[in-house]
Amino acid sequence: MTVAIAEAAAAKPNPATDPFDIVVFGGHGDLARRKLLPALYHLDLEGRLPDDGRVVAVSRGTMTRDAYVAMVAEACLGDAARGKGDAIWERFAARLQYATVDAKDAPSYASLAGMLSGRDRTARVFYLATAPDLFGPIAHNLAAASLVTPVTRLVLEKPLGHDLASSQAINSEVGKVFEEGQIYRIDHYLGKEAVQNLMALRFANSLFEPLWNRNYIDHVQITVAETVGVAGRWAYYDKSGALRDMVQNHMLQLLCLVAMEPPISLEADAVRDAKLNVLRSLEPIGGSDTAHLSVRGQYRAGAIEGQPVPGYQDEPDKAGASDTETFVAIKAGIGNWRWSGVPFYLRTGKRLASRMSEIVVEFHQPPHFLYPKSAGAIEPNRLIIRVQPNEGVRLQLLNKQPGPGDPKLRQTALNLSFADIFGDRLPDAYERLLLDVIRGRPALFMSLAELEAAWRWTDQILDGWAQFPLPVKPYTAGGWGPAASLALIERDGRSWFEDFT
Ligand code: BG6
Image 1 (tube, rainbow, N blue to C red):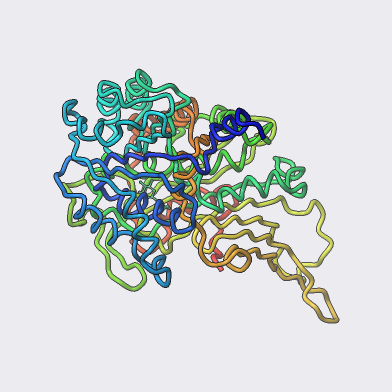
Image 2: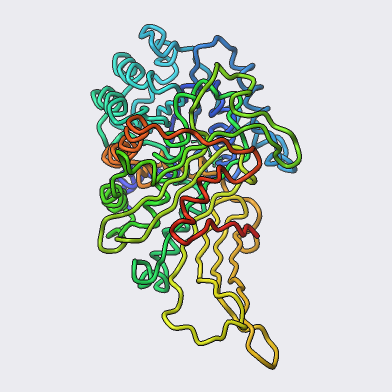
């Protein structure tokens, strides 16, 4: 190799080994402690971070670096550290810096600027894990402090607004400083392994795609059930509710991955365009139809795993009476050739019977059934994608029960459990997404157009609820939501799939 070629090769960017700085605004907050720092630590543990990679936590509070490192140690050193010795923790701790910055106060960015000086060519990520009303001011103050370089990326956490107008206002402020290509809007559901696998299942196999349409699929159910309540987040949640908190983002993204056309590649624009087409094809739900096509619920006191829990209105940090929904069910439709007439039933709620997120694709019954009634109940084929926990894929089939005499059919499943096949620990969604941001891969992040299309659809439902008030139906914590949610699907002659074996 000549010297010139060797120099050129050395200068070529290599996202896997090039240095980076990730600056976390809200570095002291709940998300940073619970998710972001443990995710970065796990990446380091697995040797995925380049040696010269730094994590700068930014927060308004004054804190010494040592105190911050001690706090992060507490957040990170759980199971993962066991048996690995201290060396990796020491390596990770050495990456940590702490800067006191008041997001709205331009002069206070000086300390951060000092930490980043001399590293203008280093990949730089600003991760805004703060309230969204700070996104605009932070973007402007970063620019004013000359901290935005051509290799800077900006990560925006949800909620990105509480409706289309507020979302546009935030994006427009941020857009005055950052190019669209620099903005990474995070939806952590897109980083979940089973969600990623949904793409592989559909597009790396030839088995399903020919059947993936209205001719073979009767309906789709998407359930995201949580056992947690909203204690500790009442102030945020009460202004949001389940529709904005879960449906507008996570559930619509799941729906998009189920319903989208095969993208022409896995490049960001191709995948985003395919999802955008789904969002734009969602049949509007609004006006008086909203009451038939949606259900709102709110949990009352009950028990989760045998332990009594208070109702939403009795949570310790409640701030008065509220009719915010902690549960929502929706019958959605997609107006295009592939999906016309196929309902997508969505439901999500807090304080439900178990933590379980699942996508169920239910196929039509066979056109002509050969077996007598005595053979047993005729269950349709179902493809069940378990998003969490116990990630995996099941295909339910009718089989003949072995034995002589009259035939008996029994429903059994081809069962692919990720834990059995790939081992116990699946990386947290944030590990994958953070690594993608550091390496400059935007495919798993939402485009502005997607975000706006999702808000447009959600806003119509919110308007429908405002025009034709839909009372929140109480449900007991530890159940599966209000009875009206059962009625929503049962009046179509279908039922929620609740075999969580
Ligand atoms: C967040 C919501 O986006 O997702 C929370 O704001 C919710 O209310 C959480 O609990 C669920 O995420 P996961 O990964 O635990 O299913």
